[in-house]
Image 1 (cartoon, rainbow, N blue to C red):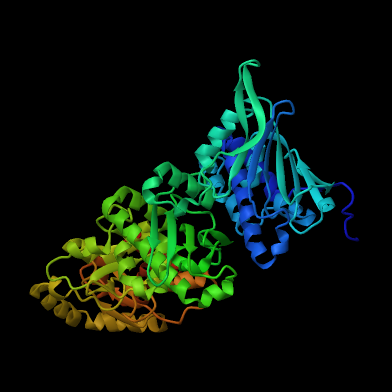
Image 2: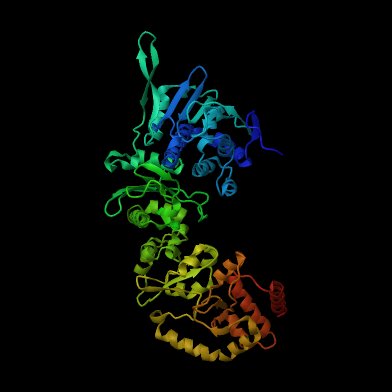
Amino acid sequence: MGAPDTKIKETLGFQAEVKQLLHLVTHSLYSNKEIFLRELVSNASDACDKLRFEAIAKPELLEGGPDYAIRVSYDKAARTITVSDNGIGMSRDEAIQHLGTIAKSGTREFFAQLTGDQQKDTQLIGQFGVGFYSSFIVADRVTVISRRAGLPADQAVKWESDGSGEFTVEPAAREARGTDVILHLKEGEDELLSSWKLRSILTKYSDHIATPIRMKKEEWDKDKNDYVVKDEEETVNQASALWTRTKSDITDEQYKSFYQHVAHDFTEPLAWTHNRVEGKTEYIQLLYIPSHAPFDIWDRNQRHGVKLYVRRVFIMDDAEQLLPPYLRFVRGVVDSSDLPLNVSREILQESRDVKAIREGCTKRVLSLLEDLAENRKDDYAKFWSEFGQVLKEGVGDDPANRERIARLLRFASTTSEGAQSVSLGDYVARMKPGQKSIYYLTADTLEAAKSSPHLEIFRKKGVEVLLLTDRVDEWMLTFLHEFDGKPLASVAKGDLDLGELADAQEKEEQQKVADEYKELVGKVKSALGERVQDVRVTLRLTDSPACIVVDRDAMSAHLARLLKAAGQKAPASKPILELNPHHPLVQRLKYEEAKLADWAALLLDQAVLAEGGQLDDPAGFVRRLNQMLLDAAAK
C-alpha cells in the first residue's frame, strides 16, 4: 500500500481503547460535565507552553508574534462553543495520532481495573485523565481545525467526529498557527450558550492558567433588552502563573483547581506545599500529594508528574530528575531562576542546580508527609493506603533520608487488627522491658502471617510482632537493619534468642529438653536426610508440633517464593526443622520406630504448608496422611 493522499477527506477508526474511553466518559462523567471546558483550556494552555519552548531554538515559529492567548466564544444560532489557541498546533499526522489514539503506557491495565461501578469508575477515569475526549460529554459532534506552527496556511487539517467510533480528516486552511476546537452541543445543553455561564466555569476551573483566556465583551443594551456582543476582547482569568503569587493571595480552592489542571485529575489533592527557595539556587516549588494513586503507579519508568519552568517559561513535562523514583506520585511545578532556557534532559542529569532542587524538593515532600503523619492522621492513613508501598522503595533508593523515611513507614502488627497503622516509633515505645530487638514476620498475606506458628511464643509473652505482607517488604529489609538503635529481627530466622525476655527457668528447661530429645532429633534428621539442613527442639512453639526456620543470614522462605513466582532463581537452601517437645505428636514420636520416617516427613510437610510454601511431593504427603488416619481408625 502507498502513502495516504493527504489532499482528500479520509475516514478512519478510533483505537479500540479510545472507543471504550469515549463510552465511559459520556456515560460516567455527565454529573460533572463542566470539566470539558477546563480540559480544553488546559490543552490549549499546554499548546502555548510547547510553542514557547520550541520557539527558543526556532524563533521563526512565532509568525505573528509571541502574544499567546486562548479564546472562548459561542454561537447561539449554530449552537456551538469554540475554544481557540495560537499555540503549537497540529499537522495532519499529529491530529490522527493525538486525537485518535491514547498514547499512554498502562492503558490496558487501566481498563482492566474498571469495575462497572459508575462511582468507582468515574474516580478512576479522573486519575487517567480524560483531556480532549471530555468534549463528548456535552457535544454530539466535535470539529477540530489546526495548523502546526511553521507550516503554510493551506496545510492545516480538519478533524471531525461524532464520537461513535470513526473520525474524518481532510485538508483545511487556517490563517494563523494554532487550533480551534468547535463543539456542536447536544440537545439540552443550551445553558452553556451564555457568556455568564462560560465565564463562571472559566473562573471556577481555569483562573490559574498563566495564558490569558479572552472572550468578547458584552454590554447590556436597554433598547434591545439584552446583552450585545462587542468587538473588543477582555481577559477573564488572572493570567499570571499561580505559583509565582504569594501564598496569602491564593485560596485553597485556587490551589485545588491548579492541581486538577497540572495533574489532569478532577479529584482534590490530599495536601500541598508551596515555597520560594532562595540562596545559591533560587526556585519556586508547588508540590501536591494526590488523594488517589494513578493506575500506572508501579511503572517506575513512567515519567514523574512535576513540570519544569525556567523563569515562567515552560520547559518540559514530567521532569524525572526533580524527584527520586519513590516520590513519583508527587505532582506540581518547579520554576527555576538559574537554569538556562535551552536546558535538556541530558543537561538536567548533570546539573548541580538540579541536584540542589531535587534535594530541596525531596526534603520538602518528606516534611509535608511528616506534618500529615503528626497532625492529620486520618489523611496520612489515606496517603499510606494509596502510596505506602511506593514510599517503602525510598528506604533503599535514598540512603541520605533513610531515617526520615523509616519514621514514616506503617505496618500491620499482632496488636493492630490488620490495619497498617503501626509506626516503628510506636513499636519501640511499646517494647517490653528487656526486649532488645524489633521483631517482624514476612508472609504472602495477612491471614498467613497471623496464623504463623512462629508467633506462638510471642503471643504467650505479649510481645508485639510486625506483620509484613507487601511484596516490596523483603527488598526493603535488605536496607533497613535497625531503627533507633534497635536491630530488626525476623521471628522465622535463626535459633530463637529471647534474651532477657526468657526467664531463668525457661533457659534451664531449654537445655533439659535438648538433652532429653537428643536421640529423637538424630533419628528425625537421619530420616529426612537431604531435605533439611538440621533438626532441633525449640521453645518458640506452644500449639504447633513443628515449624521451619532458616539461618539468620539466609534468604527467607517468603523471599525465595517471591523470586520463584517472578521466574527468577533463588539460591539453593534447606530449612531447619524445629520440633515442639511439649506437643503430643512429638512426644509420641519418641516411641515410634516403624513409622518414624513417615511421621517425620509429615511434620516437615505440615511446617512447609504452614509457612505458605509448596510441597515437592504433594502426592506423598497425601499418601502418608491417609495412612496415618487409617492407622488411627484401626485403633
